[in-house]
Image 1 (spheres, rainbow, N blue to C red):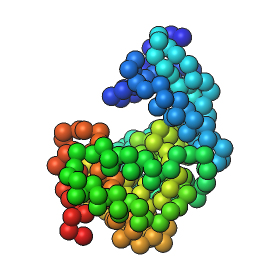
Image 2 (spheres, rainbow, N blue to C red):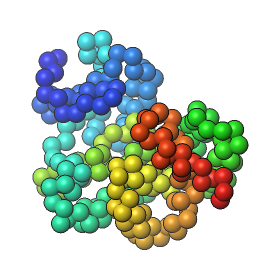
Image 3 (cartoon, helix red, strand yellow):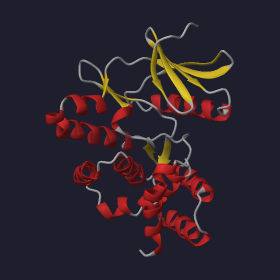
Length: 249
């Protein structure tokens, strides 16, 4: 397999296009279990009927694990928002409605969001008191079984020329409480430096889904702790300011 058409480069993987296929090649030291789990997540979500690229093969390229999927031709929603700022609200509405479609689905074989969050809280660089409070808060959350993408942001939506949106990158998919997924998206917008847009997103989602904003906000310290495990120095102070909220609520 000759790979020379690079689509994107991430910290731990390089994504290529080969004809009508996407080849995601992971670094040599990337966890085999995580690669197989990502392929399994994507395969399971395919069965819900959502518009996502189908997994075609899991293989090795030059000794590195790779996932081969359908290539979806189009622009990401992030690119469309940047190219057409006058349509940003219209694209945001599409984004919110698409996320609600995801949450409407059930996928009983996906890992549970609560289990993943408990692991992340245990790994986070936080004090024992805060850790206990976060575990306690997580345990008290309503137990739902909705599909949660886990990294739902405009760069993970590809819109075809005919206007059909596809959702990509299912590495972090779980089943659980949709408000946690919304809190994570809100956090990602804030980390991107656009608090006003994050607030507009949250208001729109809560309005359309008839969700009380306080339910999403209760998840913010938990998703911040989860994000902090990635260990990005530039995010540390911001995330810890959110995690510490749990201490006085």
